[in-house]
Length: 471
Image 1: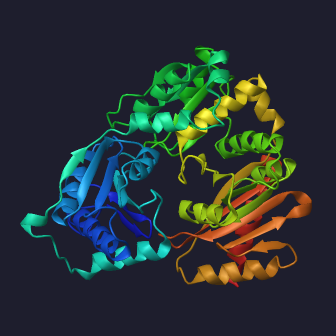
Image 2 (image 1 turned 135 degrees about the vertical axis):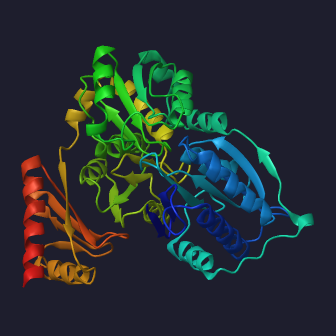
Image 3 (image 1 turned 180 degrees about the horizontal axis):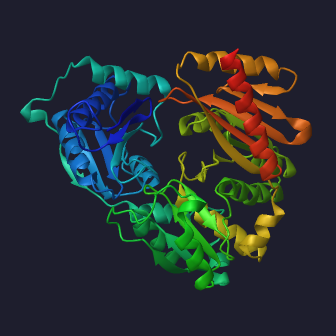
């Protein structure tokens, strides 16, 4: 059994003895701490605090929802219960309902036995590192002070699915007539969670023929829920068999988007953001926008930088983590940003990863281009990422290795905002070493214009690290 506490919330496996996994006691403690710090952080919009709660379809969701909502009520906080709702739907629901915050109940791409609490501010965005740490400290203090009976909160229920869809369709860059005119056929794999509710409904309003795969929100995930190519064989086969134009895969909370070309080959998750950025940057260029900015994290593909510069814009890198990306986006006024795991963040909608926004923009782009998805993919800068890890017996070795790498590659372009990233500009390659927040390991991501070179670069760095440990 596992429980992981971090500045972005808590997550863990359900079941087992107290002290192991995500227990009801943990859920109550952290929900209380969220309320306590909410009160110290801001004044309510109205006379009372109001918090939105949404959840994915995983099996433990109803149990966790009851505990969270009950604790909020016990703290004197009014609850807007969204029921089944994607992460971006819940984020938008915070602003739609003028709430003071939100709690999303989802373990994202983790397997069925996991669940988590993800915490939002009054803008529907994730809390800062300092705010998250304050909640962790409060939960561990054991000091709880609940509301008297006359001041208990109240629960109302509201489904924000249609408001979310309508907000996506209202975006100026989403060209509904152009998409409708193409009569696309699309296969959707929603891995038996809330994407099976919202994604087909969005596609229907876009005039797209939707073939549903694993769209019943039972929580019994049909396959590993992370939308990686090795988990999407059924989707790839269905796209080819049905002669579809596109395959769409989302994770259980629908903030990550992976696409499949009409020939059954992966579009590659890293290129979800790249393709949407290519579209928006092209529109900005036509409109005469000067120096549009994009942002992704340090472990995301160089292709976004290439595409941004092609359109006369500036690319910025942020530390890994959605809140770090959105913070940088706010700082530079980014047109578009996100992460290489299929996360698209479009500020004209909201500052959170949103697969619905990603799909609508991607279909608009392909409709304008008038070409197949595979043909379009071939026009983008081609890069390949390899992922390795360095397992350590002692976490104290992490800083030693990172410092040695920084010194060894001092003649190259080096970033230390999140571990050590080395850009080999002349070879269009990079390697990124960063510490895990939960284990004594260093993650090593490397990218190059061909797969063999990406893998070789990663292996070279891992070998260097082992020599540092031995020496």
